[in-house]
Length: 152
Image (cartoon, rainbow, N blue to C red; front, side, top):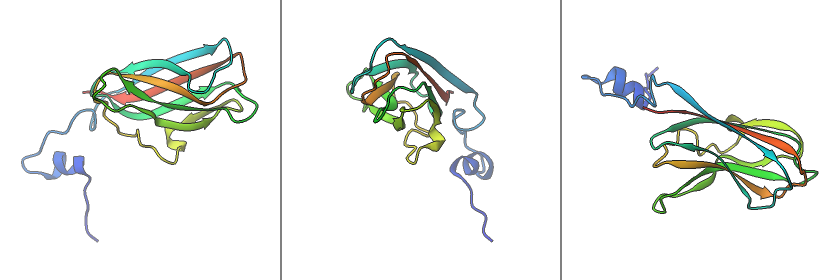
């Protein structure tokens, strides 16, 4: 049996002399960005809800979205980020994609098949957005979002 080592394990433990590992990836402190939004009317397709801001260098490890029953059929939302800097590339569904909001629930990044935002390092200050993909019918309800990240 051969021993194999992860990149950061190799840098911190195996390398002689050891190499410094970014604290956001090894031994860092977890932080949370949390916000909520109370509906006061129907959400239309392409509506964006700005839920917070991640600082440059934040490394995202999880996203959890909790929501009321927002639609009878077909309502979906994405969770991602967008930059004010036009030179950086936005990704409106990096953390959660096509979340079905037709009944109340909670969805975490771990439940998504394609977790492209897992371990993503934010390249500049980024707004965290919930984008309505399939419009909703509910005129009341709540959306809550928590983003867990580390920052050196």
